[in-house]
Length: 623
Image (tube, rainbow, N blue to C red; front, side, top):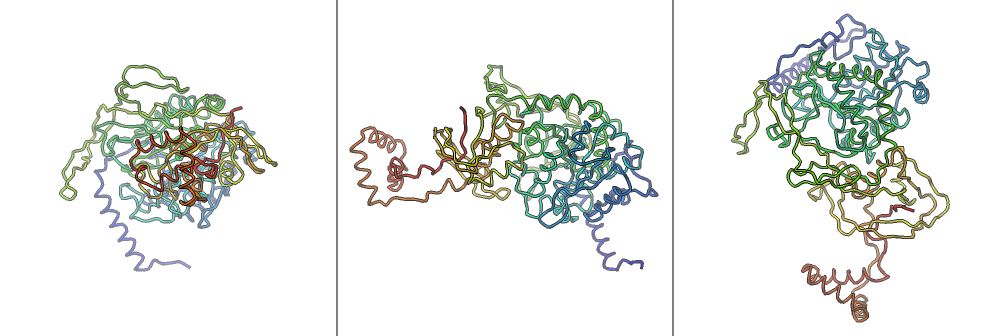
């Protein structure tokens, strides 16, 4: 029975179309574009035309349509297989398409095949869905479009939608700064968590699914496909590895000097304008330069770098038309498969070199070098008295803009003019390592930190569990002062957590670790990642994400009527303590005026005091 569209449905569609037209008119002027990649679009009569192609890239298919299309394609081709890698909190399957010429496409079989393996994911932010439609087109052409040869030396894993729940929160009112499609999904998942802030802490089922794929299949290269926010410029496909900061210098060199040279040429030959990852220094335009920041392993690319997995972040330009962005992503995916087939063994060599490189000291952060009077620091923590460090400069393919004054905010704002411009701008890079920590032989994590142990296991970190109690000489951190909240110490949650920053001192303990505790060696392929997860100084450690909140609670107290005579006795018996007390009062007026703080200070000097208060329970083993 043929179904007809009701009058109200037609009215809704017309209203949606009218809204989208109005919304697009507010965006900066659109540059006309035509490129050779337009020939990649399937003809209307093609039985395997994708839903986005059928709609001329005006719309992107919903979850159910996407899954049906992928499963139908896989059922028709021996080269494609659909597997479920997890389920969202709303019950949707998170699927991955395995593209391989191998008869056995299990994770173990693909590892043993000797072929290179590319893992690409789309829709980690479900409104930024270019990768889904590009990947579907490429899979179609691998199966039935004469591109089977792409699988001769490389196997391909493709996750069309990672944020499956956010994908279904689609609306024409999402992402008003993005030019199509008309039905964009939502940035965060059903729990309102940003998946691309979750790689270190692993709160979400979606990112746990990806990490499971990484640990099981062991891809040689990992690509995460996004769409930008922010400024206007000429580039349509911006992407790259982590850059000169980070923990995998050999991988970095391969991504910059081998992969990107090839894929840039391929994109250009198809009529696209590839560029580097871009972030305006002033968060508005590029007149003050571009800045390349180190985000930390909460992000996909920095996470890959920390675990020595070649990782590429793709940021298509939101102001380019959807069709242009999708076609550019197709070209990038295909070119990546081709360069991996030719130069993949050198990528594996670079990866092994980074995996075995165990520096004695590991930086917990990276920053942009100071402009004047700077002292640069090499990867091993050695200071070099260089000349003043100047930022690099880059030729920037910009779009012209002017500053206009707002009568609403009484401030200036940028208006983009839709005209091409070329300028030389400063290019700041966070290449200076900061806050070095000496690499221990390993870490002891007590059994009562079972959630931490579970997350380390999910990460694939190697560890050994003890089955009887063991006394171990370890170095432990004591928190000396701390603050809760964001980087400005504003008391507000972030990604479901209350973050912590702290200063610490170190103490030696002959600590008894109960049965069920684990030893995590730092000399392992994921040793750098383990340090970033377990060192309190790391902004993405489990400590910094607030997993150790109980250590900030004092649960035993002493009454004033007991402490007052005790304090008098302590002062009478110890001239050194009396001197320390007088110095503290002189130096700290708030302490001097606070009776509770004074008695608490004396309490902390007694054997009655809780010796686990503010003691980070993870121990560092050096012997």
